[in-house]
Length: 191
Image (cartoon, rainbow, N blue to C red):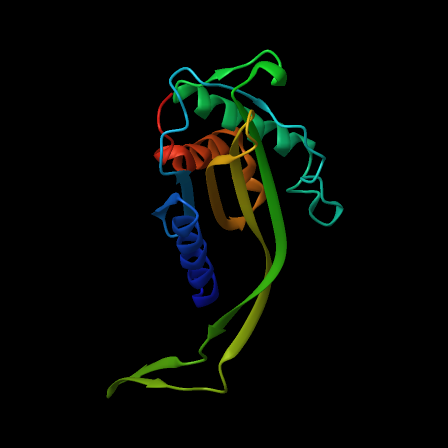
């Protein structure tokens, strides 16, 4: 984790604590926050908050598209049900509004490869350094997923989880998304 990201995670956790939230990190890439008081009563119902198609990003259409959005929605619904939350028939009668946000950013990494070689002869082996090291750059997609639970009556955020990692096409399977969301919801209190 970069020093900037680590600073941002700790700053977010500090702000959350001041604002009355409890912040925990499940691992180095996941942050969850919830209101200190239990505002998620037993048997709470949820419905999807009205959102725009922010996930569909033409620059990252291999990752951000409607198929991935449906898979994420299924993963979130499945994990909420596993925690005892019920899906409401209508947003008007739900206790919680659920939303998720995906941010994708193209980034570039670098690999340093030395050009050392080992030569062996009758006197033994010698490691010799060749020319300057070779630097190879590569592009990758860095993604952040944020899941919010909002009290529908008051409009207050009662629980949030954020996770970030490199994203590849193989990360978009339903089983991978289910396990990622399960890790994010580990701290979600059961309903």
